[in-house]
Length: 395
Image 1 (tube, helix red, strand yellow):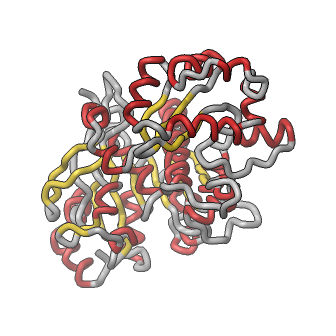
Image 2 (image 1 turned 60 degrees about the horizontal axis):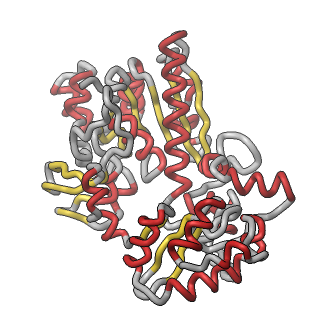
């Protein structure tokens, strides 16, 4: 089958999470991605464990389907080679701190002279403009700035980080859809453009219900644990042996839950719980009543009752249970790939299932500098020139 982005060439200057996740997504969809790693140690993620045969599993997870070269951009010859790579590229992606690319002479204004149709995407903590643009920021700082950390955790307890690097992934996905939009525009007009993506704004854009509460009623979202902000009961509850989720998110489901799951039809007429707004106001009492019943039976008992009643719900799985779940496996979300050093390694699959242009895992993440010579020969450098570059610490 055809790969959707098989004609797209991407030069990837990114490292760690947000940028590499973006370029992995483009590579999964068929783009040729050449990952340019700094000389001599490469992507910082290579220093993060666990390791298999000295290869970082963190690095391998988000750098599949890419060609990897190691290039010294502090050397004039390194910049020359980089510009040759960019000359026929569609996209350059970088996540240096703002100002670094300009110092190196590889910022958008410099590179569009080499390639006027270039799409250039910068990913940073706070964006390229504004009073905070100069500040360094990782996912954790973005979580604090976006307000998401302040609303995450249990009521009355300190703020906590989200369980995953959500802001990095949000920035990666924001970069992906803006790059694809720019690519369509380029195909129509031949024009490239500059894309400025920030971790803070990417995640902030996901806070739709919370923004509605603030703009509409002046409410400041507080920590609610697993509770929903506008629906009840819509949260996790303790059972005899674990936890179960209940998603009675509308009146019909609430009534089914009362009658067919917990067998408490009188709750339907209880003035504290008559409407969703009533249930929200009395959510503490509601939670105590529901949990006092659910703790009497194991999780699977309630999962079966919820399913039979047609009320959305399910167990709260540990991550090992998720990765071995029959549905996750049937959907090919755990796959194996052969790595030249680590051997057979498991990776997460591709979440979008397209009928005509499916994403595909074609190759494992590159070892450090694995494709340097191959890529340079593609730029018409001779064996002698490549050896000289090695001797001079450029590659």
